[in-house]
Image (cartoon, rainbow, N blue to C red; front, side):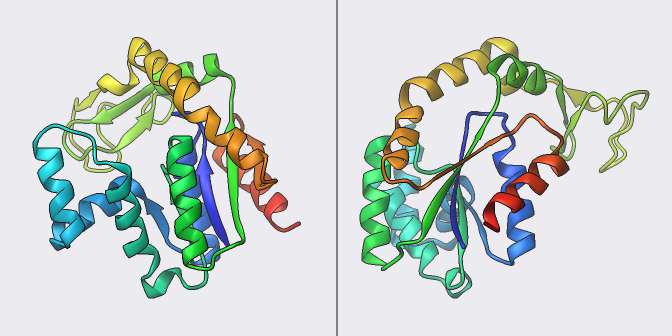
Amino acid sequence: MRLLLFGAPGVGKGTQAKLLSLKFNIPHISTGDILRQAVKDETELGMKAQEIMNRGELVPDDVMIGIIKYRLNKNDCNTGFIIDGFPRTTKQAVELDRLLHELEITDIRLINIYADEEEIVKRLNSRRACKTCGSIFTLAEIENSDHCPNCSTKNSFYLREDDKEDVIRKRLDIFRKSTESVLNYYEKQGKVISINGLGSVDEVNVELLKILSN
């Protein structure tokens, strides 16, 4: 099983990717994680990416594609993988298609997790992070508690910049302008599976597994 996880910020891509990874025993490949790993491993592309990031610039598509290629060539990807966070533009989608063709991978599918934007704003704005361990919780999860459930630190919860309403709306606007074209690109290829992401984590996962089994 080879999947691309797609959707606006806050729809639950990362959560569902982790669940699917465990269910099918295939790696969850987050582009942010593999970029950091490439830098840590001091690979040629990782060092190049580090130089670019040190200048405060975005890592160019060709470098990211190279890092993704390096990751997909690892043995644990032989039976499948889940890519989360890439592609973000149509240009990246075209480059990824070229890479997959080179690797003789033809059964890729894109899972489009969608949700009402106002609900996304409400969901993200109700999250709180722990200053000590970085874990993120909903307000419901920490109701009537002043201790982090993960590290037990007292009074450590705060609202991250990324979860403030004005920032969320800007992120959603960027998604509409640059990333939704990716969905159209894959829809033309008949590779899109769409699912509403507003149910509970378990509800969405059950529905997703049902669709993938067909």
